[in-house]
Image (tube, rainbow, N blue to C red; front, side):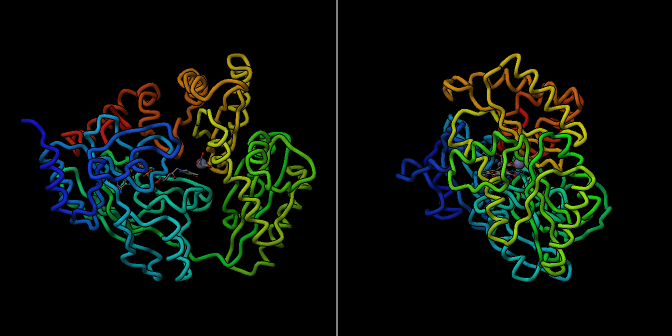
Length: 475
Ligand code: FAD
Ligand code: MLT
Ligand code: ZN
């Protein structure tokens, strides 16, 4: 039977409203929905569908299941692995969740919020703050990424050290299954041992098993004080020792430990020339450290100062500056948050998002730098990341004079070089960004056949028609 796209679109319009089914034929500009944030993948869509309620999502999913149309769930489209955009064939429909953005309930006593998937992360943080609570997930794209996307990617960010990644923040989920059935797991319980923990399947599944429509997430008491320090050092080993020492001194108050390499700092200064210098001299490595607590600002500042003094005396620190106020803390953070943007402006770079035991990160960097020196001697490693979580973004920028396109052509060779070292050290090739289409073919290289087989069996059981984000994560 031939597919009648006009009839299909008419049915979709009847289900969710004329205004919420966008198509090129109708003159809608779909560019922002079919191109990924990095501009690496350009797809085409049968339509962009913007349902406004869980029931409308169910209706669309049922229509898709009946007619064999593949759906690409999309939140803020800030993902870095090409998981949220359709393929170039123009037969897949983008299911954009942005209109499902209500905060259904905040329960301050239970320290939970029940929120729809299309809620922008920053908006959720603000709603929580309005009742004196913290929703701790925090990342550079928080002004546009959405809770559903954060859950579907199991996002990490800068406070995993203290609060865990998205998986640890989700208590309950509401999911529309690939046949349109509603799986209601929206519970705000911290203990629930009633069989398989089904919500875990959908966290980090990148839209391949169902559509997340709402979640109940954990909140925490909002800290009343935050202090940030910026330190420079010559060796990565020193940074790892500093992390251990600061955690010892500050305990639970220590919330972030972010790494920035000298070349990453230089790149930010090149593209954001207003970035101030925080330390008098340049170092090979820098770390950003944050502490947060419920007491007074002065008490926390004193505790941070005492911890830094102890680290100086113990030989874990050589050069450090403590932000004197909130505005200065923010400029410290800009140095870290602007790396992604500076790399984007700089052009050709091959991104990595690896996880390793924290203790072995210096050895990993030494091994990779040695190999790069041998194989790609002029390439420019731009390293940064969440050292406190053992998560390094070890991106490799094009050698001077090599075009972005030519350098992208080396992606497989560069990935193989780096990811083989990761595998040899029992690390992960994706700590927080996911697999998407970017690393799909690499998954087969680094997962065991048994792991892949179990993943395929789960996919087959939940999505036998293969209509949920096909071509992503597993082929
Ligand atoms: P999208 O990009 O729209 O989608 C991502 C995946 O989720 C896709 O597979 C999509 O199909 C699926 N999906 C989206 N919504 C749903 C839903 N409701 N149901 C089912 N599937 C869904 N990531 C980090 O982990 N840590 C960081 O520190 C970090 N920093 C970033 C900084 C910048 C400047 C940028 C651009 C990105 C950064 N990211 C980071 C990556 C990205 O922001 C995260 O992966 C984020 O969680 C994606 O959310 P999104 O709403 O944009 O999802
Ligand atoms: C980050 O840590 O800044 C994000 O994961 C984004 C990136 O790696 O570019
Ligand atoms: Zn990151």
